Image (cartoon, rainbow, N blue to C red):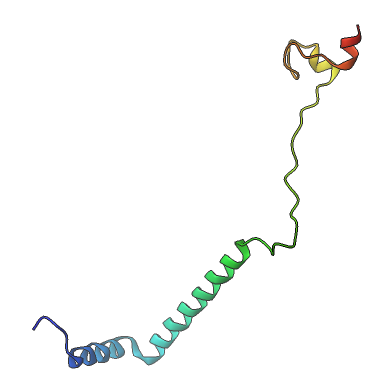
Length: 89
């Protein structure tokens, strides 16, 4: 009694066909297929390229201190560091 027989599934399928119609079900399956294709395309775009292509590393940001910035209360370069010009004086 707890299991569903083939006749239960046939009745359920007929009710679904009556409610949605043949065209509506095929339209939903087409939309589902388009969604899956779009999802796979999105995953393929996120994957890195082949191993033979070398990607350039991101540029490193370096802070260069100007002479005006060093003389204005410690802004720019940390205290104790001197430019080559100041080291010779």
